Each structure stands twice: as structure tokens, then as C-alpha cells.
Length: 318
Image 1 (cartoon, helix red, strand yellow):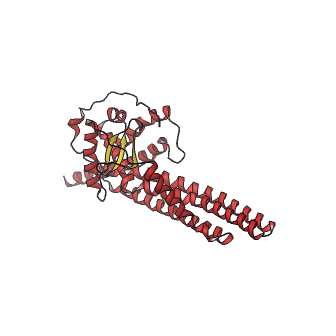
Image 2: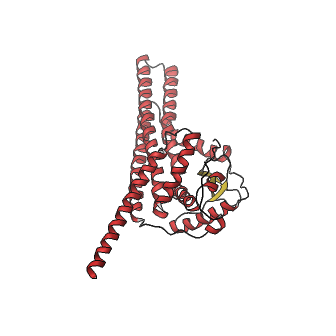
Image 3: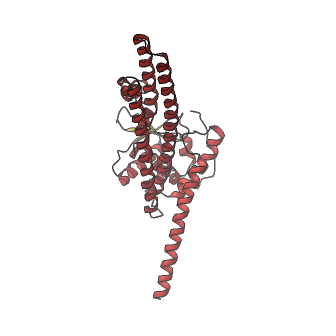
């Protein structure tokens, strides 16, 4: 990752130590919560289709070639377990800085408010462009880590940082990193199964001397199904990852102020576009901002309606 630096702007905030108090939500969170529920349903639907498609293709490969193809998911699970255990060991924690101490306090408070979530540990990582949830765990505490750059903490207002923290906590609560690995296992199990199938067909052709036409037909069918499967699972995986980002945004809106998250993303967007390229497996900042604006705009309209209705009731009573 690069080391982009956020543009400086005038800040009307006091030093971090004066912002340890909790921030009062400025809207009813039910509206945002309904969006989280709908997105979760769609994520589960697409994920189920993904797993179902992988299972179907592996069964077809096993029928065409050899039952060993069904071992593909286990091979992929083993690969990810070994890579996460040995290639990417837990990161040695660093000494928290003052803003991070404040962030940890907000993480603990938000985690308690959200419920059913173990508060992760936030650490400074100069290679992190902004703030992200890691699959690594702190060696001392065993807690999952959230990495943050100091440029974000020194530039965004505390209320905006708190909204970004709530977004990251959504990834922790819904175990998005684990489900991401499952999606990758699903996608690459199709490829692994195809490779095992092709190898078994080649071995059978060499040892048993099966007909050339049957050999070529089976190989062609496996390759064709693999291409279709990889493309389909890739599209579904991309859709699920995009929905997860939207859900994390809505989750943040549910527990903080949507305007603060909007302001934070709008400010980060300028720096991101100047230093990084878009990730095709993530929604763009523009798309995320439009969705947040749509939800917060609806909240504002709902609040104005309730306010006007209450005023009408008061005028009638008087």
C-alpha cells in the first residue's frame, strides 16, 4: 500500500483528550437498521448461490472424472489456514499514541452498544492509507486488529473518526473477513476441482487408453464449465463484497451520525483518487456517498415530517 497524505483543512475541534465523551445520535436508527437487514439478506442469498454453484460444478466434475475432485474445497481451506497461520503471523503491537487511546475508548463503547462483538484493538500502521480491519490479532491480547494511519486521525474531526470506526466494527461484527475467505475458497475450489478432474482424465487416458474423442470431449467440457463457473462466482463474489461495504456504511449510520460518515468519506475520497486506483471488488467512494446521502436525506425528510406534524398538533392544542 502507498502512503497517501490527507489534505490539511481547518479544524474547529479541541485536542483529542477533550473529546472522550460519547456522541449522541441525531436520528432514529431504525431506518438505517432496516437497510442493514435488507443488505444482509441479499448477501446471504448471493453467498448461498455461490456455494450452491460450486457444489454443483464439483459434483459434475466428479461424475465426469473422479471423486477426488470433491476434495477441492478441503485443499483450499487447508491452503488458507496455512497461509494465514505461517505466512501472515500476528503483528507485533506498537505503543498506542494519544489519538489511538481515544479511538480505543470509542471502539469499546461502540462495541458495548452494538452488542455481540469483542472489541478489537486499534494500532498505528504507517502502511495503512486510512483505516482498515485486519485478520491479524494482537500477540499480547489476542484481539483482532484495526490498523489506522495517523493522517486520518490528525485530519478528520473526532466525530468523523468515530463514524469510520463504526464502519470498521461492522466488518468485525459480521465477520466479513472470514466470509471473504469463504468466498475465495468457493471460487478457487472450482478451479482446483477442474485441475484435479483434468489430471484424472489424463491419467486415465494414459493408463487405460480410453478413446481420444471421449478424452477431448471431457477435457473441453471441464474447461468450458470452469470458465463459466469462475466468471459467475467472480461476479457473485464482487457483488457480495460491494454489499458488505454498503452494509458497513449503513451500520455506521445506524450507530453514529450519517452526516459525519458522509463528511469523512467525502474528504478521504479526494486523497484516495489522487493516490490510489479503484478496487473493482469494492464500491467507489462516489457510489458509497450517494447511498449514504440517499439514506440520510430520507432521514432528514422523515424528521422534518415528524417535526411539522408535532408543530401542527401543538397549534391545534393551543
